[in-house]
Amino acid sequence: MNKALLILAVNFFIISTTQAQKFAYVDTDYILNKIPEFKQAQDKLDDFSADWQKEIEGKYTEVEQMYRAYQQEQVLLTDEMKTKREEAIISKENNAKNLQQKYFGPTGSLYIKRQELIRPIQDKIHDAIQQLATNNKYQLIFDSSSDLIMLYKNNNLDKSDKVLELMGY
Image (tube, rainbow, N blue to C red; front, side, top):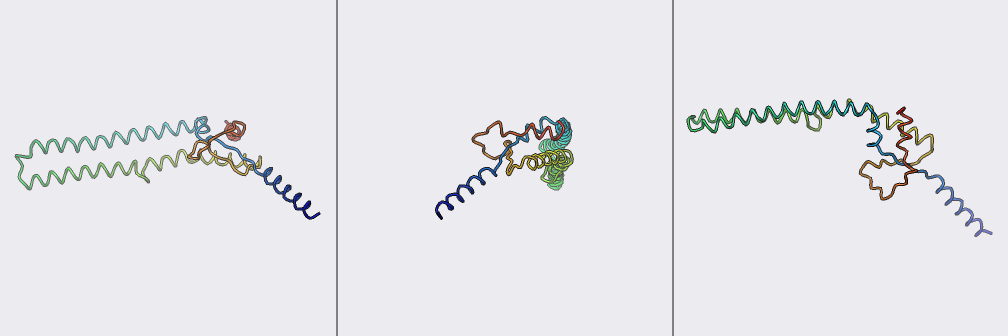
C-alpha cells in the first residue's frame, strides 16, 4: 500500500513539473529590424558616427601634415625649435586621440546617443516579452539572436511575431 502511494506521488510530481515548464524563444534582431523607429534611430547613429569619424580623420590628417613638414624642415631647425615642433605634433595627436575617446569611447557621445535613441525601443520589446510571458505562463523565454547556443529550434516556439503584435507592429 505504501509502495503504491509512493509511486503515485512520484508520478504526480513528475507529471506536474513537466507540465509546469513552458518555454519559448524570440529573435530580438528580427524584432528590431521590423520596427521602423529602430531603423530611423540606427540611421541617425550612423550619421553621427560618420560626422565624428570625418572630424577625427581631419585631426589626424593635420597631425600627419605637421609631421611631414617637420621632417622636411628638420635639418634647418635648431634643437629648441625641433623640441617645440615635436611637442606641438604630440599635443595635436593627443588632442585627436582625446576627441576619438570623447566620441567613440566606452562612455562617449556615441554610447550616450545609442542609449538615448535605442534604449526606449529595447524597453518596449522587453515589456512586450514580459507581457507575453505573463499572459501565456512561460517560465523561460530565450533570445535566439544572443550568444546563447541553440542547437535546435522548433519554429512553433518562436514568439517573435507575437511580440511585434503586442507592440502594435
